[in-house]
Length: 327
Image (cartoon, rainbow, N blue to C red):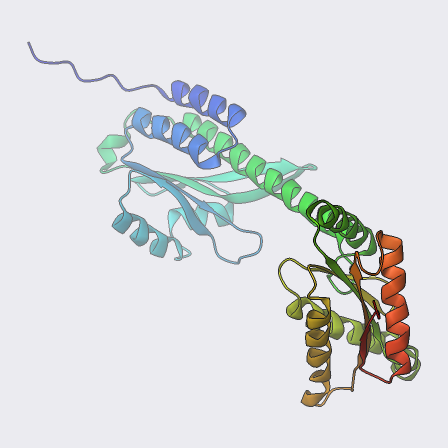
């Protein structure tokens, strides 16, 4: 007795399975694979493909396929670059494109009453005869589910990026991109606590831009901001990975350096600042004061006071000087 051919699932089964996958999974590719895999089998399609329009890129890109090997994917990716390809035309015109062995459907969502095109979905058959029984209305429902899945994924990505941006904003100085006062104060407390437990040291350095008031008066606020950004760039490049550097005041920066290498890092910073004027820009110099825990203090307040006292001695010694506490 001949073995019976396996029965095809119907498109409704694909829609049900796809809806469940989209609702319960945060994995876009997995949800699309479930939805399109069952739908393609249900309508006898040999493959399916999705082309999406990235808001930041002018041309649509092939982003997902099933039933295609690597070579076929590469060929289709090149073909999608042609404005007349069904996937590209369906996305551009937001209309179905029937190309005998290919049916392309636009992916559209609405937000605020305005329709937005995301791209297009195409089902591909080996021959026109293979399309018998493929109801376009059912495939439109599949396309709508795909559109919802893609839109949901993009919204989640946007929320995550915005959350990350706000998190960075809460911890960084917007002008220089360095840590802000709140963040470095917390880091200093944690490093002092750890050094106290381990019997180790922490170096703290305060950097001050020489004659910053004169720079602002001569060139205006923009010139002053340029100087601060230049100093911040040198600081960020000179410190070690374990160090934290922050903007500490209008023209001051604070370095928290675990261990006893504060003077070494401070000198490296001053050397880097000295090279800024070599490219023909304005001459910039900074002065620095360095203190150490526990030699110069046992808490954040006394350590910073000691570093500031050392900074005052550096200022009195002339531009571009660094001093440590005498302890």
